[in-house]
Length: 112
Length: 112
Image (cartoon, rainbow over all chains, first blue to last red; front, side, top):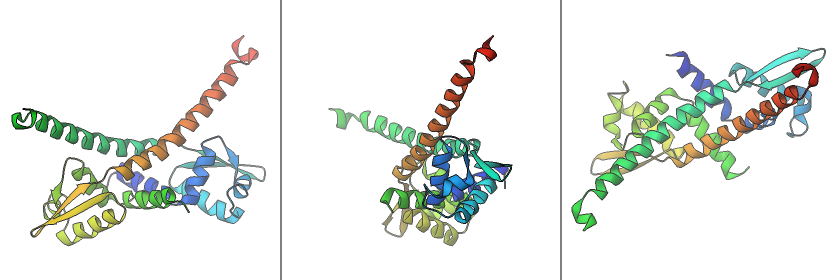
């Protein structure tokens, strides 16, 4: 199995959890200390750390410990890969619909 | 929990499996009989049907039985919702980087 396939499995699985999406949403606005993520998201620090570790495993977040603070930062590349996977399939689908429409338009009994 | 949240959970969970992505990839080119999906994807018909049912539960595929054939078709709306979720977070992240760059550019000691 290719590394892209494994990466997509990991990315989509990580995105399937609403708490992990909440964390990514907050991190899309800039780096945050893990301890500061908990309260606004209505989670315990332990809960946040569990999800942050899962996001690190999925390469969607990097963390760095400075003193006693664990800073979390979004790593956007896997999001780009996931978005590209989806948009490529959507484009194929749209093209298919366009071809179908062209086929319908070309039928003389429809246009007359 | 909102229906969008539940929908995203379901969509991303469905996309986390490589076989289910293979099926969606094939269906993005047009409707296919479930029995015709198996061989090109190196799967058994039973395996395909299991994944097709999971994709139906995630609203990513609709199926219709005509005689003894179960036709499968892509339902693109959940893909659009998932792509929008990702691209919105990416835009926030890019804007944050732009602001950071503007801040660096505005520093006289950097520009002099």
